[in-house]
Image (cartoon, rainbow, N blue to C red; front, side, top):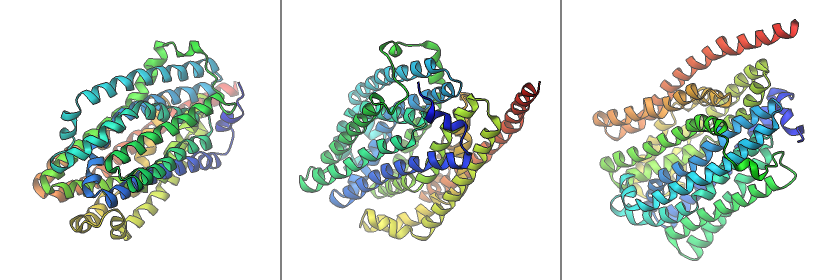
Length: 458
């Protein structure tokens, strides 16, 4: 197996590597976020603000099931990167085969469950009143494509684990562009409304997976699995499960957060408040694309160098990733603070939503400059295979801080209590992550690096 590409993760200068990994990841996330953003704009202008609220209700369910694929992908990709760093080709191939098998089994099961309880799930996630019918239409069709999306998300993380970020970027761009084209055709030209939006989304998943299958069958991939690699290796599955559970827990908490926020905001302000949150959540996905890109670029570099026992390079990777991500996070913060009214007006002309959303958006983004440490810190523990700390830090933001805040503060401050919960949770979780990351660097990385130097000296 050729190691030309993966070996670069352990030899090239860290700054250049981060840029090489992060820029394609950022572009991919940007295009994917633009896809979600434009999708929302299309529906807001051609279907109405109720359509925006309906999509926001469905997202937690489809995100959670799709997150199964991402969880399996990230958990397995950490193993693959470390295996490549340790020159263990057999383990890398077996891991990839097991990822495919378990993704198919789990996501198909979850889709069956999701369709069975469709009328119970939609109201539970805030799909009440006028929101219910369009949400049900969108939910059913999008759910059909979730196993395809899960496989695509899993495959995309493996491509990045091989050290081929440009192919991973293309894998994200293709479905995004396809979705926008199909949105225009199905919603505007054919006038299918919510049904058209749903089929455009599902069709984009199929385009994405088609490209990823081509990549792994072509000479571009180092991972040429055999039929025997699909058989379960329980030690590998155990490790995939432990690391993937971190990502799955993160997405599960996100889904629970959507459920709570949609219901709390509906009770506080009705459909317009749910629409306000829908717009803000799209901006969170879109505006933070460069920060998330640096985080995605950081993962394979950290995993590879940990597997290769290059602890000095790993510490440098942590420091530079936090620095780069913090810089772009501050730029995002500045833009949101200056132009919230302009941003909101692109989505809708609903007077109440236009009036309420800019102020709420400013509060939600108020602590964005500090989130880089939280994201890189939790990603580090996942990259090196330490599932316990990774899970703790992943849950610290949404589970341990944000959810209690949104349950308590709105009782005293109404809708404002919801929006102020965002920056408070960001600050608290960043403090927690900073403590654990600093302790890890001082007590583990520096000690292991010194031990390696002593061994080499003898």
